[in-house]
Image (tube, rainbow, N blue to C red; front, top):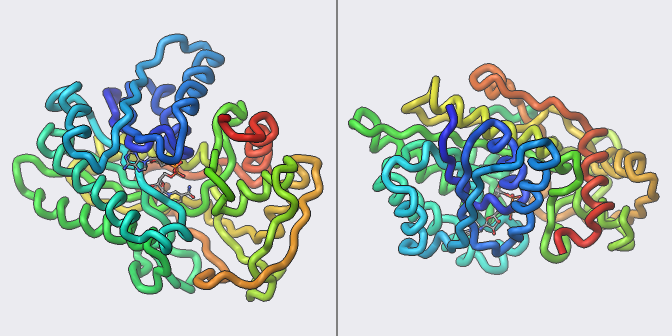
Amino acid sequence: MAGRVLVTGGAGFIGSHTIYHLLKAGYSCTVVDNLCNSSQKSLDRVRSIMEDEGVKEVDLDLMEVDMCDSKALETVFEKYGAGGFTCCIHFAGLKAVGESMQVPLLYYQNNLGSTLNLLELMDKYDCRRIVFSSSATVYGAATTMPITEDTPTGAGITNAYGRTKYMIEGILGDFHKSKVKTEKPWSVVILRYFNPVGAHPSGKIGENPNGPPNNLMPYVSQVAVGRREFLTVFGNDYDTPDGTGVRDYIHVMDLAEGHLSAIEHMATKATDQYKVFNLGTGNGYSVLDMVKAMEKASGKEIKYKIGERRPGDIATCYADAKAAKEDMGWEAKLGLEEMCRDLWAWQSSNPNGFE
Ligand SMILES: NC(=O)c1ccc[n+]([C@@H]2O[C@H](COP(=O)([O-])OP(=O)(O)OC[C@H]3O[C@@H](n4cnc5c(N)ncnc54)[C@H](O)[C@@H]3O)[C@@H](O)[C@H]2O)c1
C-alpha cells in the first residue's frame, strides 16, 4: 500500500525517523507540525539521508500549523481534498512529564485539543485510519512484568502527560465504537512505546531536546560529549540487580518501523478494528547498564552521582511485545550496542542538536 500519509508532529524525534522509513517504502508524506519542540532541519536532514541512499526526489511536504487551531488545520485537508490521505500517524503532542505537572492545562489543551480537531477533520475529509503514539506510562503503577496489552491502564498514572495519553486512548476507543457497523468504519491502532533511544545510523537525525533532557539517554550522551558535567541517577536502592531502575529501551529505528507495520496492518487485516500494541524489546536494562554501554560506544567516561528516588518511579518496567509480532509481524531487531552506537554518532556529530 503506498499513498499519502499525514504525519502530525513529523518534525520531531520519532516522527522524523518514521518519515525516513515511509519515504523509503514509497509513501508520500505531509507533515503537520508547529515546530514548538522541533526544527524543520530534521526534515531537511531526512531528505539528505535519502539522497545519500540514492533517492533524489522525495515527496515530503511540511505545513507549519498549530493543530489546536482547527481552521488552520483544515487548510491541510483542503490542500489534498477528500480521500487525499490514506492514513494518519499522530505523533504531535507535548511530552515533558515534569512540565506537564507545572502547566497541566496546557498539556490537556494541546494534546487533547489537537486530537479532537484532527479526528473531526479526518472524518470530514474521508481519512479513517489513525495510528496514535501512546506510552507505557498508561500502565501506571503496574508491577507484574512483562507488561502485556491486557495489563490494566489508568490507575497509578502520576502525571498530566500520562493522563493525556490515557484519555486520548479512551477518546479514540469511543470514536471508533461510534463508527462500527456504519458505512464508514474507522481503523485505530494504538502504539504504546516503551523507551525510545538511539538515532538513524548516519547520525544525521536524532533526539534534540530543548533544555535539560527529561529522559536518561539524551542526558547520558550529553555528559559523554561534555555538554553536562555528570548524570544524577535517581535511586540505587530499588529491588533490581544493581539497585537502579530497569527499563525497556528500544532503538528508534525499530520503533519507527513499527509504524509502517501498523499502517500496513490497518490497510489489510485490521481495516475496521481498534487495536493496541506494545512496542518494546521485552528486555530490561538498568540505568548503570546503559551508562556502561554508552561509555563503551563513546570511549568516554560518564560521571554520575546517586540522587534520591523520583516520586512516581517504579523499579522495573518492560514489555511483552508478542502481540505486535503475532499480529503485525513486527519485532525489534536492534540491541543495546546499536542503540548506543547510533546515539553517539548523532550526539558526537551534532553536539548542540540541529543548531
Ligand atoms: N520520546 C519518548 O520517549 C516517547 C515515549 C512514549 C510516547 N511518546 C509520544 O510519541 C510522540 C512523539 O514523541 P517525540 O519523542 O518524537 O516528541 P517530539 O517532541 O520530538 O515530537 C512531537 C512533535 O509534535 C509537535 N507538536 C506538539 N504540539 C503540536 C501542536 N499543537 N500542533 C502541531 N505540532 C505540535 C512538536 O513540535 C514536535 O515536533 C509524542 O506524542 C510523545 O508523547 C514519546
